[in-house]
Length: 147
Image (cartoon, rainbow, N blue to C red; front, side, top):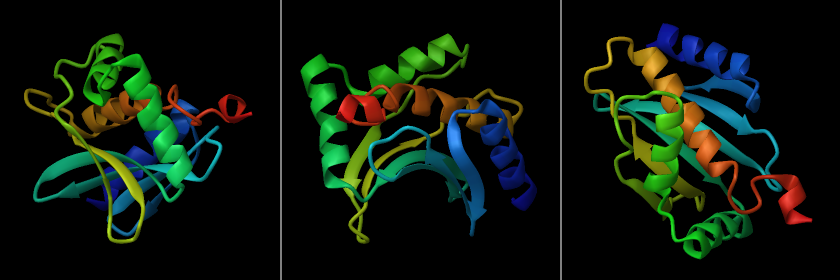
C-alpha cells in the first residue's frame, strides 16, 4: 500500500489544490489550502475500502460548513456529486458521515465508490479532488469568507 499512498501524495501535490500532502502512517494527509483554521483531507483504506475525509479540530469551521449546507439546502452528497460529474467520474457519492471523533476532531467522511474503475489510485485521487472542490466552497474554507 505504500506505493499507492506515495502515488496519491504525488497526485494531490500535482493538482495544486492543497498546501501540502504527506503520508502519515497508513494514510495520506493533505492540508487544506485556504481554510480559515487548520483543516486537512485524509485518504485511508480500511477493510479493503478507500475513504476520503475532511477533518478539522476547529468547531467554528465545522459549523460554518454545516451552516452553508443548511442554508443552501444541498446535502454534502449532492455537492460532491456535482463535482464528480464535472470530473467525469462514473459513480455517485455515497453517504457523507459527519461526526466528532474520540480525538475531538470534526469529520466529514465518505467511502470512495470504486465499482467498475480499473485504476483504483486514479479513482481515489479523482474522488479526493471532487471532495475538496465541494467542501472548499463552504463556510470558512476560504479565508476571505471568514473576514
